[in-house]
Image: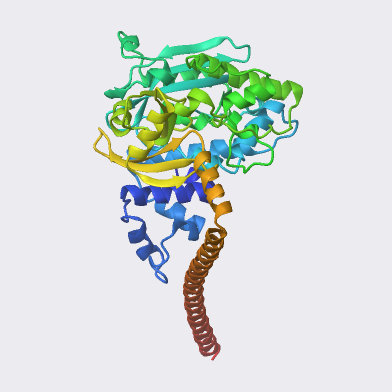
Length: 499
């Protein structure tokens, strides 16, 4: 273990030390701060941020741990960092497949989206051999998973599908959740409680199957693959996330295209037609198809920016309310309880492991409007000017939750009538103009106050840095004095011996 620590990079060591702090772990010399008191007699634990300490100090602290369980945890962290570092390197004669792997690993959001708690129980890290041939292997498989909501508010794997480059099925299995389920999300997963009768396959069984499939340096593909890997509790270094390698034109890097939009642009068809049930196998095959198309056709152009989930809403579409940013532990029963009126809840396809969206479908526009006015919440508007409310409530899981309830269109009628009133009443226009100026002035004043606060904080940080520099200067001065004194003593002893 000592050799591995000596060869480890600083980021890996910092992560290990922060992990020990978070979990209250102690080595033979106590915790991190206890260790610093003994290790650094000059500054002690006054500088306890691991990222500001030397690699030697970090490694020496980790070496104080000897329990087998602790060492096993540290090795997992080191292995993950080593694998990613190895994959991120640009070798000579890089294949198109490896280029896409490296594009995924070096994406600006990768370190956030793929920061997994691999040290926790139940997580599996696939081994990446340092054999150059394994690194150049171009074999690929694509995966898609479905998850259900459990009683404790977490998600559990319920279905997994894997296909190879030729779209042949390598794995298509239902999985028995390891915790009690409160919502099967049948509208999304296509799985009900009846489907799981007699199913005995566990998450651990799936992990072992995937380890075999990925054992020869195989590349794993998926759209928003981090969500699937979290559900699988699996860390694999050679991955391609299609949400990273396909980008919108003239859009922030954080805006990732949906699988459906990528397929429309690359393949000329949708994953499925609107209203068709979700199919895990279809998504896995679609992810593989678009990667193969990108490689074979050398696609580099960005995807045209489109408005997703924001269709025009004439007729019956207006008789709906869009519910979004719903926490995953909120059930359909909660939604029926919170949204008033006679309606049907239709769960939309999940795009995040943290929340989902749904539609409340009413019989008429009037009923939808009445429900929106009745539901209790803070009124505001979304980025497109559509009315919505931030609704706070207590769900069945006994948690306080927030979600947004939004109309499908802006209140154009209200806007038109206000414009007509303004046209008839010039004084109202003038008063409105004054009010706008007043509002702008208040906004500017608030902005100035915020800037002042930021400057104060910067000044405080600057003062802290100056104090730290002064302390270092004093320390160096003391050491110079000590060295000078030692030189004088040595010179004196030398003269005496000469006499």
